[in-house]
Image 1 (cartoon, helix red, strand yellow):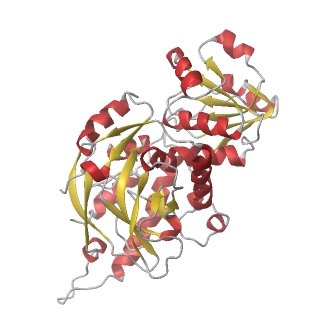
Image 2 (cartoon, helix red, strand yellow):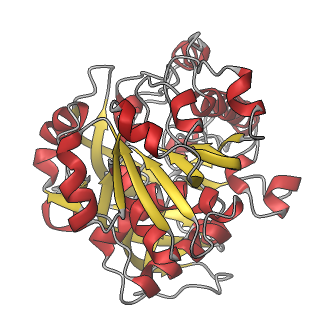
Image 3 (cartoon, rainbow, N blue to C red):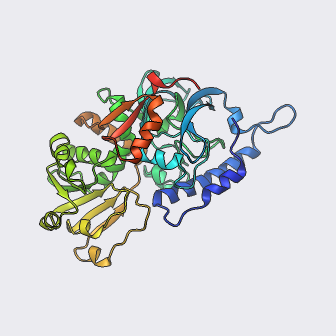
Length: 410
């Protein structure tokens, strides 16, 4: 495997004018990662004739998966290597991997920070096959998962408070530069080696296939609900959008004992929201009468929508001092009149995934309360079709790849 060329990496940092907080964060994280890569290259082992070995050449563990090699986003078989299991590492045989909308953005370079070839996937579930000599939390055979990150600096203020997801040195599960200078590859693959601190243990009663999407979609909605007090029984939660994130937010909301109202542009989703997912009410955001009747009734709102949409009508649904948390990533800047916030002392916040401790807490909570994602299990050879359907929002609500039974060696 060829190491990505320097000029290709420099192109990653052309940040578009519509850059989302996440895309900007990822670009900055990648920039810092590249600094580590250059430092690692200067200290890399040499061959007998004095040539420096690239980090990828140092890795000897053969792996295979599905990778995109250009902005078409087409995924095809790809052979690569992982590092050997270190003393603090856990090696995982990947059984299932969810398909997140971030995967779509990344393989098509829509955030303009992609390093090709890219093996996506950060909703990983599988079994431990090897542990390092200093690993204490896991043993061979354990059911585990890996979410959106595989390392961080582990020493900054954010890390010390359990917010590794906001660490300036966060290393993403894919499309990032690891501490040894190698490119990280994700879960559309047969195995992965991860520092034990970034491995999540699955409760025994939580199915791996339906639990895998919780490692991204689940923690993305659970964390803001926890930190903004939207997990207290009896409170009224609005969920904007009923997709991969929204349907899980409804389930967590009901598990917390909340009154949950789904807010959507699609009237056709009302029956599913109430009868299948357990929502208490449904608002059509394009219906002025319904929105007027619901004004000032909600303690908080989780906005999961990434398409352009108007924010002030949603803020009007909040009670005084209510909170609206953005977890979706619209490409265009939001237009929010100050009066929408000032009148009523309302709060607008953002949230991006969650820390490792919170992710473990979320998965344990999901196991205890039976919270799982609604999935469509697919084979590896269906992935490109699934991506096409994802573009059209033609999935209820998460594709999950059956890696163990369908991914054949490249």
